[in-house]
Image (cartoon, rainbow, N blue to C red; front, side, top):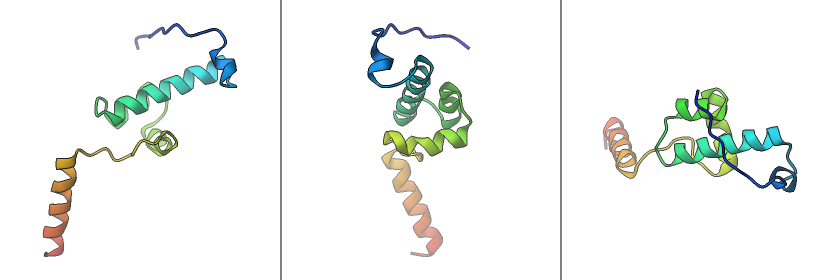
Length: 89
């Protein structure tokens, strides 16, 4: 796996009341969540980036205001229409 290095102010983790390790993990989760939200990564790849399994990743997304089911508008419309057909409407 490649390593990304981002310079941060020395006091940033402390200002957020986090250890360096906690800050690093939080940053990984936030990056993964945002890329997932934007549709750039699948749930599995985003979970790998966050350093956790897919189910755990999808479960914690709500903490960050990100929907676990990430459908585009046209996909939602298609799913609604398919459900209506199944219901006989």
